[in-house]
Length: 631
Image (cartoon, rainbow, N blue to C red):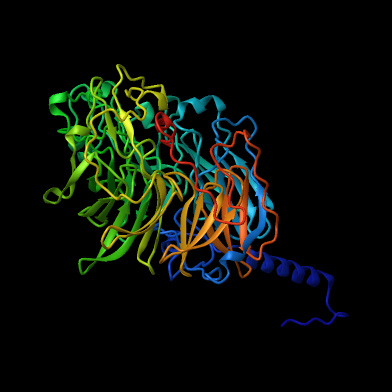
């Protein structure tokens, strides 16, 4: 310790010491930098920054499994509101639906929440006080160029940068401390009907992002940008170029052989608007791709005599590429020749699971098709596929052909032939995140079950978006001859199910508790499972499904929940359409009042009053299909 003789010490020395003290304090207060090494252990038992939430799925394997144990079976029923903070929309914003779909991040005792219309809030994780707000200033006129609303599903964080995929297809880097814009890159042209709603992912020194806009027949792709300056590193197209145009690589040349006729007149699609994951062990970026456009095969150049013979790669597929180069490593097509909008964009979970006496590195997906797929993530080898809701578009999977789905030929349709297809509008599982608990060995999946009648229209309109895919006005017309239905019988119209991936079977199910969209699930090391459904937060025993809590928060639009720890206290946090909610054991703040009927906040319902919360509304029938696509 340095000591001074007051009488003999010059005044400048005191100033020097004071300055050094302030510099030391400033250095001490600098938050620990998040980088590729930190992200690799985030959310795992080796987490270098426990209590934070640094990436979309908490860990890069996107299990949404937290090591935190302070909230457990003994005290979860005492959860209450610690604080809530307003999340006002930007002036002049259009396209929002009174809800949000963004998973928040938590770092440096700060909540980072993205909202509709590409607005980002930084909130103090202790109090909810706003630190800064960033508005990407989306032109309201371009909302008509986006399918299904101006949603945003989350952010990415690395090297002091917060990365936003803006709705108008700009990739924007912000200083995570100040909110100052650092760089932006034009990923695609909103005036050519490209958009973005995806949460970016970090892959080493790169940012990975995919585009939406399949309903406008765009040519889908996902791409990598250098984290340092936003420059393009590589791009992988999910649909080949128009006939006669040069191929970007061998993968596009191979894909072109699976299309026929004048498909490019209307054809295309294959957007990557949600499912995306980075596997650091094998340095793979794995993406889920959307459906081909238009929906009816004949409008993609496939004559009736050849229905089902043209796969239209790489639509409705799981695609793995080298994270450094973007070159194709493997693919698996979940729905060949898709004609029913069964996008394979549902979120992924990676895990190491014992299957048939051998531990396999798997990737799991439960997309809109209603089938739970399990693949070897190192090479795309098929392991299993089983329906998690009733389905009739597929009759089985050809294990001799790497599990290629065997399409039910009676599921195809045209203008003269309508068919009732299971699952229906919006798909069986859309963007709502599922989770995996390695202690129970179970995956927790929100779902919707139902059907929709498909019929081809006379002419598609590439610029009509959610209203014209070449599809006729269907609805629940059950006069058609029913086809055999394959799948579980006890799931109801919607709900939550726990699946055992070792056998790809249901362990337990909660009918009526959830849907294909909504806040999704989160699980913890204390044998808890949390779910946002409707306007309530639920907690269950993760192993048995026993309900422990049904807590109404009354505001519609509940987004995916996270858990984090600040100053030794564990919180559950999530956004609604108008406020961020932070809960803790013993929280005493008053919950918001339910909005009046007709307030324009969408389909949310009030939560429980002294008992279990009512189930969320069932998925819409008929033309609710278009509004549920959620790109």
